[in-house]
Amino acid sequence: MHRHGYKGRKFGREADQRTALTRGLMRSLFKYKSITTTLAKAKEIRRPAEKLISLAKKGDLASRRLVIARLDDQTMGNILVDKIAPQIKRDSGFLRIEHAGFRRGDNAEMAVISFVDEIKDTAEAKKEDK
Image (cartoon, rainbow, N blue to C red):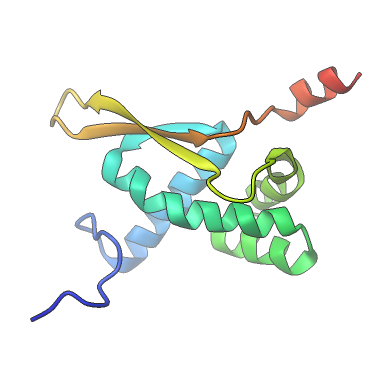
């Protein structure tokens, strides 16, 4: 047996549960700009999240609809396209993963995944524009 073509981690979940987990983690990341999770989950959501950010940076209608469909949340999709993506100045490498020690209960390795560029909330951005 060989391992070719088996992409991604399973996390002991069914496929639909993994999809829901990924979407939920990405929504939290875009909402709070930084989240703490296990290292494996942070590494797993980094690639799809960066692809979504690249789509959001295009800003056209088709990209907006794809972002909303992949996040399964219209408000977070619009926030990503309208408020977060325009603040990102780089072409790739939008997210960083920093090790954050070990979880107390099961000693799982924890990590903080966050944006490399500083992302300001809409209220902060409006104050600085004035």
